[in-house]
Length: 339
Image 1: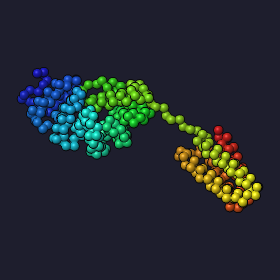
Image 2 (image 1 turned 180 degrees about the horizontal axis):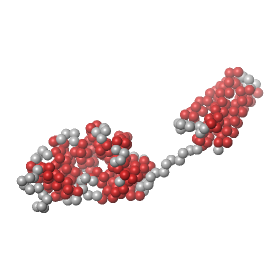
Image 3 (image 1 turned 90 degrees about the vertical axis):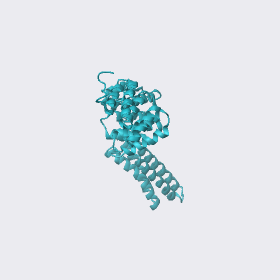
Image 4 (image 1 turned 135 degrees about the horizontal axis):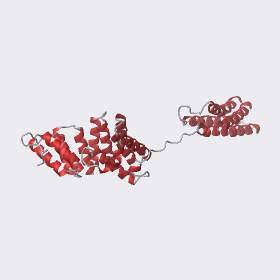
């Protein structure tokens, strides 16, 4: 036995667990499992030994054995988050996705303010459910631990699985800024780095079928172009001006022809125009939605058109129609000056 192994006299379950963790991080999983067997021989109910054994089996790609060890750990320490995470991972590897999702939801319930719990559950749900719960948990983990690269790595994984590739690229870029060594995480041995290795490998699989580049060459997604103010309000002003011009001229022709329905026509078309303009204004972004004073004046000018047409419907004199045409021309003129 190596000289640093615990002697029969001072051996404790914890000393065996510590030695097993060191061996596992060297990739010597069989030896680590032997040390843990010695720990459990001294204390058959040692929860930490079972939890470590579960991770050793996960690292060695032995999910069935990992599940048994995780269940034994939870029997001695119900609700233990690391053991629950190991159990969920083992179920995922066994493709028992519904059971893995149920464990992940329990993890979320036990750790609502725990970044480790949130990101671990999100990663499991990315495999088993691919839904809103996963992305919410990943966002929460990144918010709870903004300096944790694994939280951003999981967010990238979940976003990639959901097809939100721009978000995946940004999250991965953030993770790399916090820890540049993540580019090599997929090949790291051991159980201390088990989480990051699993996440990195899963993200590589996502990137193989995605429209973005494979994992080591992720780049931050470009910020969406911001529309100039004149481009934001152009559809509104053009529609408002065109509606007022066409409606005013049409109503004037009907009135000149002696049509008794010109005022009714003005009321209907004026109301439709005013309602449509309200919808277009509601779709503009908040803040300085009109792009300054000229944009506000242009919008008010074309909005005055339907109001003047409605005024004609009430009073029946032609002057509101003339003013509606002038307001439409004024709105288009102001729009041209903005451009």
